[in-house]
Length: 349
Image 1 (spheres, rainbow, N blue to C red):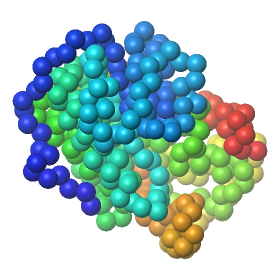
Image 2: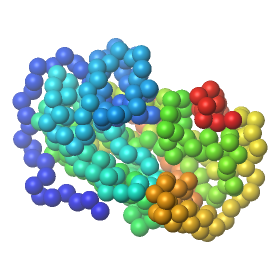
Image 3: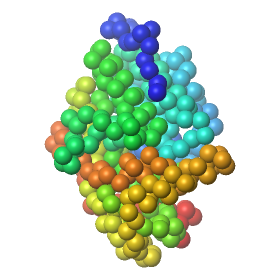
């Protein structure tokens, strides 16, 4: 578990404002959500500077009128240079994977990287910082009710390293907000849409269904949201969001069966009919993870991811809709866009 040392505690002293030209810095700009955020900013006539790690796949940014900066997310000096002339920061850079051969990298990027970026933001004296957390950082009510922004994280023991790292980094971001950095936190649910080049673990729900590789559906459900809506929610959080608050950027609460049925209907593929008991899924996922430890190849599912997923991961998204005006694309339209894109780009049958 990553911890924050006393020497890294933010101070209220702020840096002097530098000469600005209204540029927006977006970290993780080449990613699935990040590239959509960049497009939303460009649509508004903003000047965008994209910060990506060395060797990042820039396919999602091809043809866009943006400035590129390459650097490590933990290079505070490089981040500071990238922020010169900027008045706004969107911090999306993170590792989103269910499993890594070395899990310390997850904390190095997601937790320590976030602190590095926010320390640089403090020095730059920005107007607004939008930090991209995750729905994973929101807890689940013991009563089984739908969670909202006030639901405290309570899933540490059954969470994988991605979930843990996002909760830790969000906790740090809110601490920076209390110390004077104008941070607004957004918590995207499970986004689907175009340009998921990874694809992300979320996108694989659709890819594996279309390719006939899903053995069955689980109990539980999740919140499906259009990635375009998530991107719009980011920009609205900059424009209207309250500093120190978090906003769930979600769409539709569905069961896994409802999701797979709709993907099969839209995609014209074989439906997922078999219901798998939760304990069976946990056992299968555990076995997959043991194989991964030996082969050092990512498993389709991990034990803790299976434990997490068999909950009803449903969320109240009214705060983002009421305060920010976040849109909600119809579920069928979102899945149709994603299915068409995956097929057109060779990911699925």
